[in-house]
Image 1: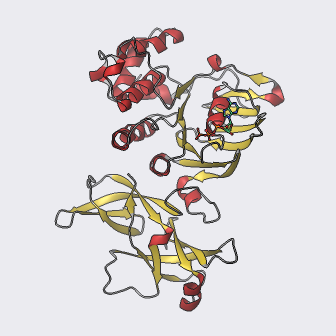
Image 2 (image 1 turned 30 degrees about the vertical axis):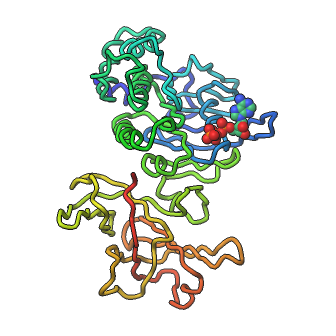
Image 3 (image 1 turned 135 degrees about the vertical axis):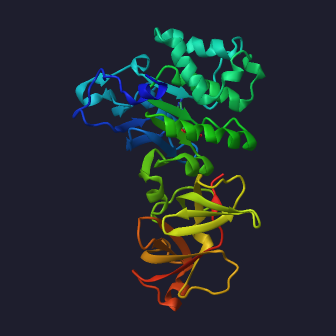
Length: 384
Ligand SMILES: Nc1ncnc2c1ncn2[C@@H]1O[C@H](COP(=O)(O)OP(=O)(O)OP(=O)(O)O)[C@@H](O)[C@H]1O
């Protein structure tokens, strides 16, 4: 059995859920703090992939994670990684030590007096397994830390420490991995080095990852599913691309409203240093950077960078001119806001983009729902 088989083969749960086919997780929690903070959340966790809990500081992300881990007690129900860990209605509450989960914190909490290998083994001692060495070898390989095992912790960079902390958590073969802002202690350059490791985890592990962040970059790059929190409540949840393409949802992203499109690099122009990226019907030309043909990439297209033209422009400096259909108009919430959001969709397929236009332009061009026309995308950013 390989490392990944272990993650695919779920352990039988101590407390089977109502309906054994309920492979996805769900969390429903309420809590009031003496400080006045109230939590009231209800969201789903798919059986694999990264679910990002996203929201501003103080909205309750860490509190949710702690309640899922059983470190803090709220009222409600927690069904995660195939296990019913809490159900107040039926008197179930599994304490933290009975929950098979991995928890990675903002700072890698490694023991400074032990080297990396000893740190990894330390976690396993508690698990009292007979195949500890095999588990470790697999986690070490997945996180690429084979060369670090004999180093002392103070000889590691922040990113290396976090990789060791994740390997330590995964060696216990958890049913779910909880990650609380694991990149927040890293500088920008280290974050960029680290993100591909997280992508690898999400591709190769068959367990869910619940990932807390307030960083738009991490959310757009890593999330499969997005749960947007605000003041202890769920504002929106769903597949990343659906939530971001819904102009009624105000996702507190620093760079404004915009969608994320998954694409594949079709070709690279060495002459112009650009890449051609296909996302369904749409093809974008973006700065090539480190992109390689055949690679998967996420593009972020901001609503303010999209304009509309009725006929395909013959000569324009904008390289991304895409055929689109108007799906709907979403007027501004405030009567004195002159802008309208227009939801644009591919003619075939479900991809959506947003354009932020003056209502005056919409009126003057005679734009109506269902109309096909051309979107000029001034820039499509490769996510990180
Ligand atoms: N131990 C505690 N005792 C009392 N109140 C707390 C405690 N920990 C957090 N809070 C409060 O609970 C609320 C939610 O905090 P929480 O840490 O869950 O938010 P967060 O979204 O994770 O924030 P951040 O992104 O800053 O980590 C905040 O109002 C916070 O001040």
